Length: 179
Image 1 (cartoon, rainbow, N blue to C red):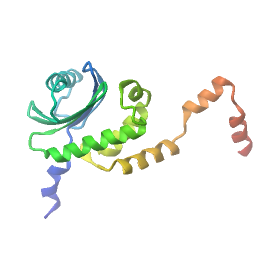
Image 2 (tube, rainbow, N blue to C red):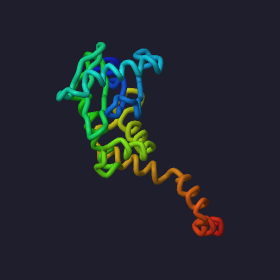
Image 3 (tube, rainbow, N blue to C red):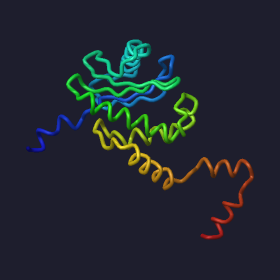
Image 4 (cartoon, helix red, strand yellow):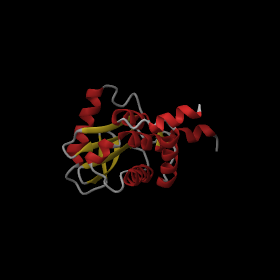
């Protein structure tokens, strides 16, 4: 089997988006620039998907030539979109990995407010699972290890700012003495 025959199956995810229970976008990533090139087209697609799925008990929908797998939790809807030919089980494994990873990061509080308070981690999770439409990882434990490593290794500017605002500069002084 040569690599050319494997290529089409690599780019399995066309889009990932998370909507609130009113159908408003909280996060979206489109990996196929041809699919919905403008923000208006993307939001129209998301609205159509939401209208078709938010009252349904299914986990899969077919709309506008796309295969869409989805899941809801409290006031959130999670969607993974692939082409009509895409394997639903593959898309479902991405959706489950996304949901399980976020559930861990959000300490089981998979709801709108918690998600919005942790958007940096949410974006990191999505980026660890999918890169340019290619599925990198479908094991939530692997995703969480990579995300926690990235969060730990990047400087926490928010904490430095918080320390500065609250006047807690001891930590800063210790660091400057070490230099």
